[in-house]
Amino acid sequence: CKLADRSALAGSIATMDRLIRTCVQQAGIPLEDAFRMSSETPARIMGVLDRKGTLEAGKDADIVLYTPEALELKYVMQMGREVRNEL
Image 1 (cartoon, helix red, strand yellow):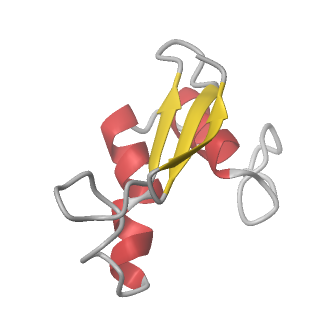
Image 2 (cartoon, rainbow, N blue to C red; image 1 turned 30 degrees about the vertical axis):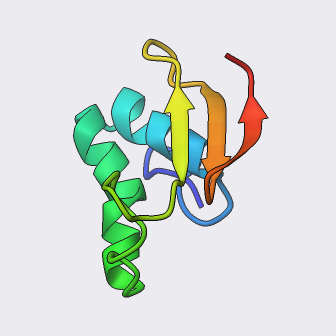
Image 3 (cartoon, rainbow, N blue to C red; image 1 turned 180 degrees about the horizontal axis):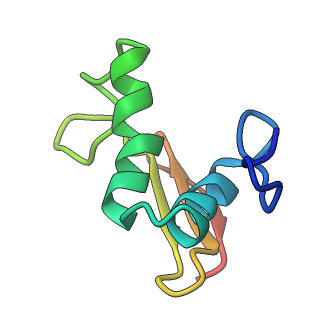
């Protein structure tokens, strides 16, 4: 699935980091909104907001870090375990 102007991928065939970059860099969506769309909104829809979707004490430690300029994925923590570290 591509954007209407066929310039970028969008939809389920793209990875989340790529979707965030597309939202911010090509669709002009503010970074904070793009992150919320990729974390809090899905958690709310799936009924797991009590343990996922936001960074709060007592929730699962699922954390993703990106470079600020290029929005490249650099670090992933899932359930408190480091699963990727390119910092």
